Image (cartoon, rainbow, N blue to C red; front, side, top):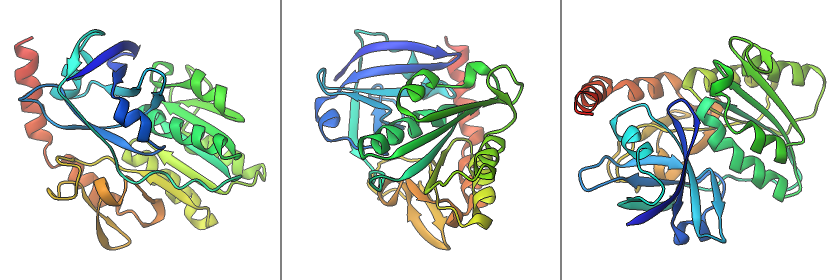
Length: 275
């Protein structure tokens, strides 16, 4: 059992949980994730390690309560426990020392780009951050990102925070200013990542995305997280989660994410009816 040290509400249905997991906190590197199981009958949930506190031997997970399992996880209070924390899993982010990286986080994607931004700064690099959301309440980790980034831009669809528009608008403006960027790391909803990649593709600007399809075991055995990268089949849990965004088949990825939508909706309906 793994103790939950803190459970903080960041936004509607979005919580930050600090979980005591010393073995993960010691070994984790930017870009890696864990698989959580709340209880014996629970689903296995892959979540990026958003932060670590080595003094407490703890990891931070940012969880958006979308379905039954993530809502159950968000209800675990400080002082409670979760059954399993498996990890760290996945390949760490490749960080080129001294590089200028533009970290683009859409909504919950900020939880993925934040530790990468920290890793870039630790390597002597420069970070430009772009955080986006439909409204200001869905722009996550702005305070944390501003503390580490050299520049931080915020966009919202409705203009309730930062500039009104999309993350691609901010990225286009930065590129138009002639700012030299070595790499873009974009994480968020599939349409957002696809749009960023279509913007950077004709410029030949290296673009990395982090994918989160359905995942069960985290060892490449179940095949649930397979994706097409440059026409080749890859498994996100062991070959990723990060890939060259210009090679990702986003259409196939979207279809895979929709594969169990009806079952997920049915499970959530039963869960809500009983709570």
